Length: 390
Ligand SMILES: [Zn+2]
Image (tube, rainbow, N blue to C red; front, side, top):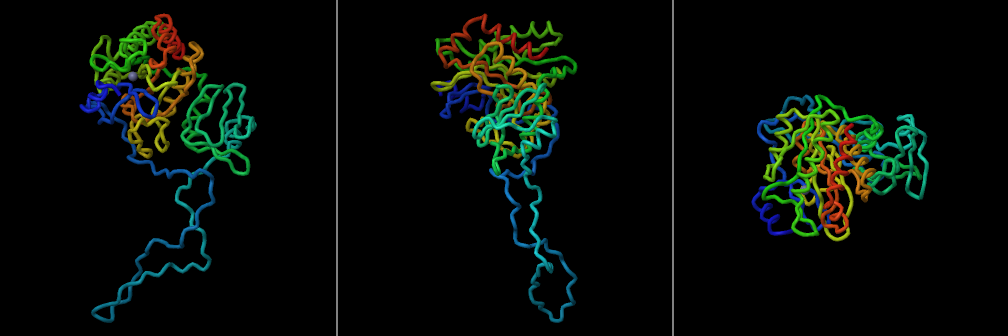
């Protein structure tokens, strides 16, 4: 962590600096902040009472047959100091197993596929299963790992699939929040009023990460890419607003506020990455659905059961993320680090519109830093994003 980043963290002013971290990953975001004043947030339940699923589907636990205490009419006291009332369990001639209130119903992958009208899963290795579809692509899920793929493109599940009697099961939240949106990836992103806010990460004192090639900073590349992307989107009929058009600092909350003021239909935050030795490739982030652990927490708390305003857009977030991620991979051919979920990114969590954050390569990787240094390459990145939004 460089002194500037440390200073930013200490001061609490943090406009999304990409950090070098001990976990070997870096992205963008910042410590949790309150939603900006003036931003109407979607009222949501404070918590989602979804219990953590077991790693393996279990039989319902048999709990002691204790039932809620039912006050019963007591006989009139016969003495001034009645004995303590002893609550007897309700008589139950045949003790029945107590059903859990809301057991996590892991879904047989076969059942999920059948419900979508897809063929039954095919085992392709010891732990990996594929579900093929002529129109919707091919899913591959592996027992014991949260990394899955759709048409060969990685995405990260909330829960590793499990197996019972050799048959794979998936968590219902993954079915709803991760798999279902991917069945629709070939459909265009809904346009609404056709307004998109592009958010060049960092700016001003917050330089973002530094290229391994020298005194070149993420904040300049993100602004350059936004300026390249703007006309490409305008050619496709979008009205485009940038959260900054010059090298200036913009608070994370203000970036969200700009999208709110514009009543934007989409929000797209642009970043470049940094990490320890060896990390390279593209990552696309969307907000973690409530009830699901994040792919990346970067030492921030990950309150799994909290529903954030942006969670109202879980389906569209995933749909948008995969469309953009796919287009980037197909256009520039970088290593695929997958569509991932994070909960700490302030520019995502209070959004009331589909919002994603893309990390367009690692400036800490010499090869990628060289590519990103090329204007032609940055133009390709912009073209890839624009193509995803046709
Ligand atoms: Zn960044």
